[in-house]
Length: 105
Image 1 (cartoon, rainbow, N blue to C red):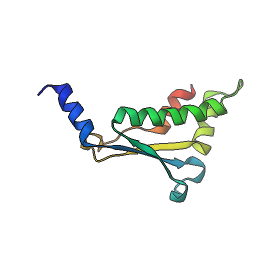
Image 2 (image 1 turned 135 degrees about the vertical axis):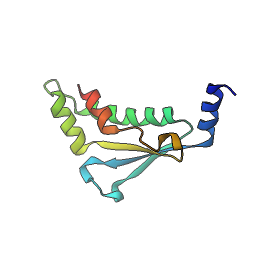
Image 3 (image 1 turned 90 degrees about the vertical axis):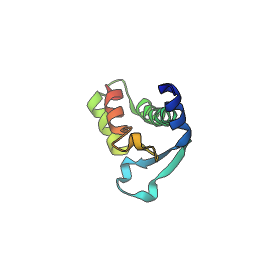
Image 4 (image 1 turned 45 degrees about the vertical axis):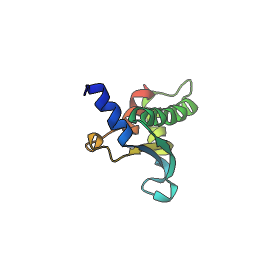
């Protein structure tokens, strides 16, 4: 079995659910919502990135610096994360905060 076939089989065995916490309500699970379920990890990451990018576009102003924008995000932005049974992602996966820091530059 080729490596690509194995990767495709793994994607078919697992689903990737994206949930979103609200940074403005840190640790308040009642503000959590489900964005959706995706067939691949890449699709789930894309959905997470789109959500973060939308927030950053809305809050980026002509005089907004990278640190200020990142501060807005960590205080008020959506914090999407991926839940899956895929053991390849057990050690970690997408980090919305890391992605937002990179995009805020």
